[in-house]
Length: 198
Image (cartoon, rainbow, N blue to C red; front, side, top):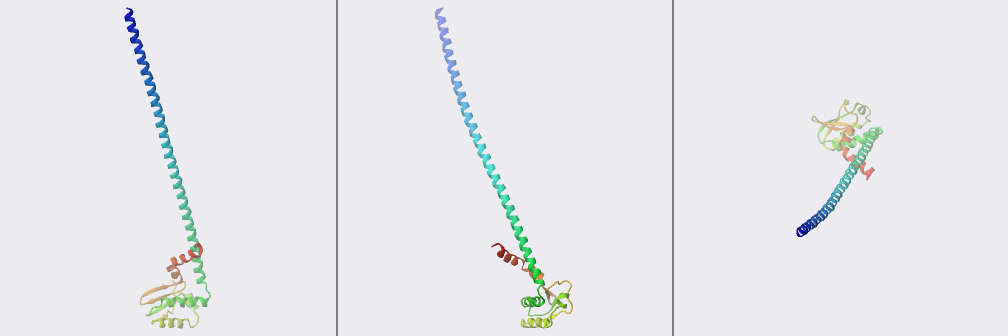
C-alpha cells in the first residue's frame, strides 16, 4: 500500500507542477497580451492625436484663408469705391468747366468723331442757348476738313445733358460727356488705380 501512496503522491506532485507551469504560462501570456494591448492603445491614441492635430491645423488654415479672402475683398471694394468717386468728381469737374474751356473741349471731341459725310449735330437746350458766337462756323470748318458737312440742329434736345449727338443718315453717335466717360470707364479706372495704388 505504501507503494500506491507513493505513486499517488508522485502523480499529485506532477499534476501540481504541470498546473503551476500552466498557470505561470497563462500569467506570462496575459502579461504579454496586456503589454501588447497597451502598446496598441498608445499607438491608436498617437494616431488619433496626430489626426486631430492635422484636422485642427487644416481648420486653422481654412479660417486664415477665409479671413484673408474677406480682407482682400473688402480692400478691393474700398479701392473700387475710391476710383468710382474720383471718376465721378472728374466728370463733375468737366461738365463745370468755364464756357470757353467747355466749348473748346466739345470741338476736340468733334474732331475725333466727325465723319466725312453730311449730317447734323444736336446739342442740349442749355448748350445751344449758351453757344459762343462763331461756334457753328468752327463746327462746319472741322467737318469740312474731314471731308464732311455738319449742320447745327436748330432745336436743342431734352435727352442731352451736355456734349452732343452726331446724326448721319439716321445713325446717331452719342458724344455726350456721360457717354464719353462711360465708354472710357475701364481705361479711366486703370489710370486712377495706377495713380493711387501702384
